[in-house]
Length: 485
Image (cartoon, rainbow, N blue to C red):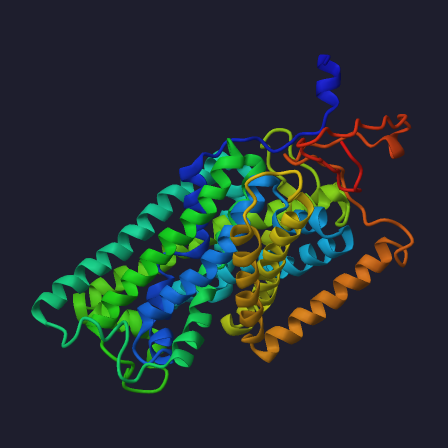
């Protein structure tokens, strides 16, 4: 290929991330200190068995994580659930899945900035929440535009610091327990007031803490050896997060047995109250810093993954391609997609955290359900051409995972469901316009299983050459339009 031809090629994402970096992005997305923030709510809902609720949530989310790992292994492409659905179901369904999870990916940066800004405003009340929103969104947007290397380094430092502060809090709790022996070490796991229904309901709430493990799949085209590292990262994020959340909740439940926090609403600030009990007011202020640091790291990671989904959908042409579907030649980042997510902070200025969270849960659990279904569809399509596809791994576990995520969808508030289905209806209308009432195919780039663009004979005037029929036992590779490659 000549230098002139190379220069004319559009810039693409570059593979710069290793396994530790991808895992760090996933953990930052989930926010390690979140367990301290929602502990009181989980303890009340589970009747004093918060660690069991987190354990149930970990198991439930692990089923879906295994499905994401399988899909990421077979299709190391940044489109995540959007691409899997397009490839294994059909293009219109894939579009609607992508549109649905935009609620998660597009609005979650806004939520991360909003939560962090509320914390900062509580610590420094002279500066209003809207000012903190602008500062947080501006900083993460600038870092993500400058380049992936800077984003990786900043995220790694902040994630390590946030985990350190959580572990420091656990250390103070253990010292407190040395001087205040708990009456029972098993009561936090199960006690006379515990019920299966209560723990299940608490597990559904705790499952929201795991949103973001799937986001590492959006980094597939920027990860070295993505077929191996992305599946590992997806599972590691859930396992590490699950162990951390469960262990911290167990220690906190030992420090504060039961689920009585004194007055109504006190469970909302139980983590801060426990920090005062075990370390004093000054220490509590420092642990509050863990939430602030984790919030910034989460905003950075969330915006990074959100911009990659926008970029992938723009590259396909289902979103404006010139704006979303291009990569800056110098920074190797989709700067306009990053900038667009940064502008979402203006939407968050007029919202409360409860309303903001209702935007994201519908999209997340819809995406989780579809990915589980995609694994089953992959098994049905490939069972005759790929060896090693077990019924347990590719049918039973994904089916159970889909049932769990559908149940989680039913547990969402009426507000979340109204917002979700309204957004989905808007996406359907957009799809009708794009396809002129389904008289045209859904726009897409023709990509192979690694995300590389394939030439399209039909649209580029190149005579189509039929591919040879595969011999027995040879994998049957089909492109996005169902044609053999």
